[in-house]
Image (cartoon, rainbow over all chains, first blue to last red; front, side, top):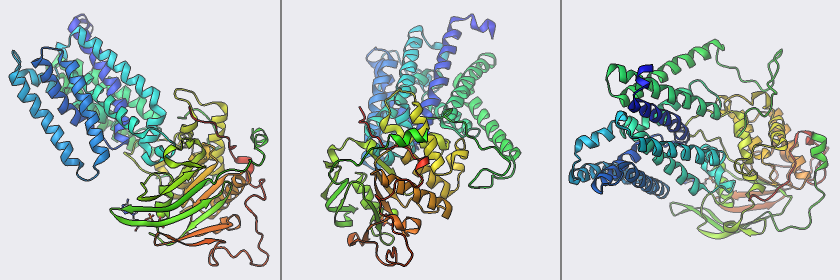
Length: 296
Length: 275
Ligand SMILES: Nc1ncnc2c1ncn2[C@@H]1O[C@H](COP(=O)(O)OP(=O)(O)OP(=O)(O)O)[C@@H](O)[C@H]1O
Ligand SMILES: [Mg+2]
């Protein structure tokens, strides 16, 4: 590990992995609660068209992907809002259109090929440039800032959209914020795990964390921890065993999920048989009266 | 703390427009009218029960009043403002018919109850002492303080219902719209909630309750609106099977008469505008 750290490309890769591990599970928690777990997947496909456009126009593939993914996310959200029944078809058109558009456009771009695209499909963290790291870092700060700023409202929206409306919250704006921050997260993660595996880093750490938690805040914090651990662990493993970093990161996250399921089950067994519902504190116990430590 | 909260209670408010005004409201699902021409005024400070058989459109009417389903025809005003232009949402406390499970990410009882204050809190602000106290009082009122740190998904149906009521209380609104708040709630908690509603009403809160049985709320309810197939079949004193106020030895407490009952565990009603 220490000697690996002396390689600049490895330092950049580790930084990129930390950004992804931190950010993807945060937006992922809101997406899972809003039942949009696979939204990241769809946005990823659309982002691919952006990547190809970047190569075609000889601009930055990341910036182009950023713009196209954000636009795609807005369209996805508006389609989702309008159509409750035929939404699936519209979404499928956008997903596959995005993928096919990427493959088609990359063929037209000089000096780029499907191999170039593959590095975005499955990630290629070792080729992350210094400029990429700055862009990814900036985006990570932006996403965390936006979610922190609107967090309380996003929590209400994801709990119950109708209740959010009766509080007068800007429901459409908040939905768009989730979609666009998801798009930014996809672009951040694209170089590390690739668009095909982005969703895994948004969903799996959250699924693992919620096996062990009771609170929304703690779930987010634990999911971030799991995300960073999986990203760093997977990257190091990949460096030693010479396997795909993206795949190693995702498989590690899934391993953590399985461990969390088993641990959660064991903890619940140890706490005793399923809790008996009662309306007062059980005789001889002190009720939890500590206030204010968890609030939204 | 509760003494201080009590002293903040306001004197009787000056004359106000009706809390809810519904005119010729029609609501349709897939072109099928479910609410068919309902007109209704609910004065500020009134406690009104909305009754009627399953499928008669009670929830739909409540949802239309809140703008959650579009009106096919007619108008809704809240506190004298057409729904479209209404902005004082911190005054509104909605208790939906059930807790929505969402995607299943855990949230503690306290997190959910505290989220009821979202309309009155600035972004990025930390909860003030009063905010925290209101959450604690709301939890105390529904008897779930000892479950604050548990996940809402681990609670029974009746306890979840009480979480929803506490969430509405925590926001300290002055206008409550509750869809079957007592469904699945045991007798003791029903009585506590009846006392709570009596106290709220004593402070001038408007309370609209969709109910199937008046139960312990019976003495509070001076007016019942009975829906039948989407129209108002009766509007006035609770019909006989529901509330027989003339019964001997039965104490009739008028909504405004008494502010004392159950007041100790109640958040104050005080509604600053959201910026
Ligand atoms: N989302 C919906 N889509 C289509 N039809 C609906 C929808 N919600 C309710 N309905 C229909 O509208 C009618 C009125 O429903 P509503 O929920 O308002 O009844 P309710 O009086 O609240 O009944 P309950 O006592 O069972 O709660 C019913 O016939 C129902 O089938
Ligand atoms: Mg109903």
